[in-house]
Length: 457
Picture 1 (cartoon, helix red, strand yellow):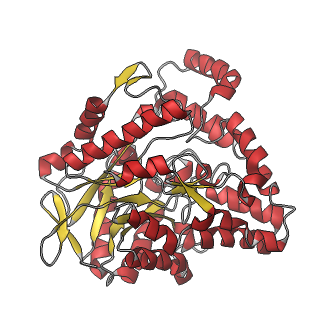
Picture 2 (tube, rainbow, N blue to C red; picture 1 turned 120 degrees about the horizontal axis):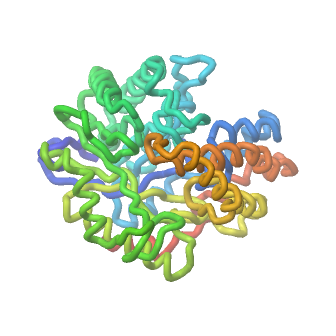
Picture 3 (cartoon, helix red, strand yellow; picture 1 turned 30 degrees about the vertical axis):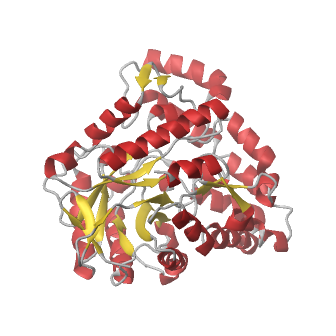
């Protein structure tokens, strides 16, 4: 595969300047686990801890090893390529390489699964983008950075940033000679409330990477969850700037599309205007744009799902017209957003069915669920909250999202971790060693209508 680099507002092959538009999908839920993708509650770390408590170290390792070994491999890469995509974004959690008990010590064994994914994608003609989705201390407020708190401590403690830079040095050294790796996505959805620390971190990380690897592109998410570029200053060379766009009609509680959501009308023109606003920094400087994440949530009924596929098609058309590459979220899950979904009759899904119904009733997942079943909790709470703190508007999303995270995604979600682990407590060692195969491509089902939208783009 050819080396890639930036040129003006696009990406080209390094040797002959042939334009390349990176169009692909992210492998969420694998090397960085997310609760709605495989069904567990709260954060990856609390999930792993609960499994160890319920099953013991060896049995928990059997289950998690089966999942990690099965979730992504050559058949998945070949299927992605068959949909006319050419890129895979691989989110990773720093804990594959570094233990918090031994900060600064990089374990080379952490590369085993990542190497395998890069190799499988290259064999299928797919570029890869390595994405640090969970950094030490948490670079944003939420579960998807494996943050057990509700504050991104990454920005408050320099040693967390030091560790992230050291990890990028190790990753860059590992893949410095691999052209099939398109580049390095330095931080997923950073949330720096000061709006000053992110640019400084990027300067440090880019310099450290280029000291060991001078060829690969860097992909830089905007601040406030890949939305804002204020304070970025002069652009970096050989850098792609990334936004994430999730229009409200595509959320679990979103309204019709086109139509009203949250008292506002949304259609293709509105989505395009939002995208243009988000990418004004790139337009001003003539820089490449990459939409690192986008994609509606499904499962709201045939009519609403069809409207959301229309939203997806509109977004892809908008990005293509703007010359922007993109990476759909997400490739595989239990039926929320995935191009490929698990079989409802698989062992994993049958064992967790009752638990997942309870978790949905409690709205313990921030993503892919509505809060309808928790109105008796949230209604009185927010009424009192608004009376007591009428001017409280916490970064990044306001008082209601702040309260929902604390009450639902933490207070109600954390006690559920043990209940999810208990779903596997009675399994034999043989079953534990194969349950993860529920996520193997051969045992999953492509969402044909969704895949057609992507393949036709």
